[in-house]
Each structure stands twice: as structure tokens, then as C-alpha cells.
Image (tube, rainbow, N blue to C red):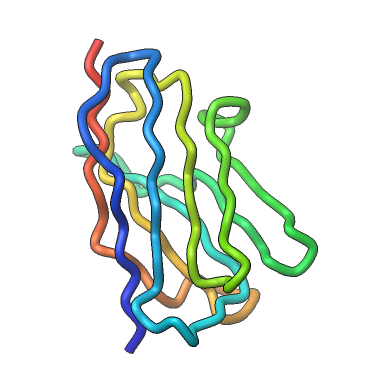
Length: 118
């Protein structure tokens, strides 16, 4: 069973930056795509960003476009999320996810807390 492990969360002031990392536990694991989601207290899980390895296409939720950047390692089992110009409304638990095919996300990480103070 593949595990995804996130790191890099923490507390930051509004306007600051954080970089999240996510790595698959199995080095031989190669995903079709990986992404980031977030969930704030009392809210539904929200798509943040995704990357498809074939073609290197990236996708972003409207609320983070122009501020967040997703990237990945060459082995297709690591993904990063650079978050700039953070706002208090970005406060949430951020989850990494991976697809082995084009349809759905098959694997999820445990989440890392990001808190942005005003």
C-alpha cells in the first residue's frame, strides 16, 4: 500500500510564503498525476492544484491562481506546492493526493496544517 507523506505546513503571517512537500513511501511508485486539496473547519474539501505528468499540465483552483505553484520531481512520486501571498482564508489542512489513472485520486496523505495569521 502506498502512503503519501506531507510536510512543510506551519504558522505564517498574512503575505508570507510556505512550501509544502509530498512524497510517496515507495520509491518505485509512479503516479499518473498528483494534486493538493485543502479543507478548512466547517467547509468542504477544496481542490487547490494538480499536475499531470504527461505533458506537465498544471491546474489551479480559482482562489489560489497566481499565488500558488505546483511542481513535481522527475520520479513522478513527489509533488510540491509553493504558496505565496498567503491570506488568512488559506488556513486549512492541506492534503496531497495521487492518481494512478485519469479518473480519480486513489491515494491520500494524512494532511498538514497551514495557519495564516492576520
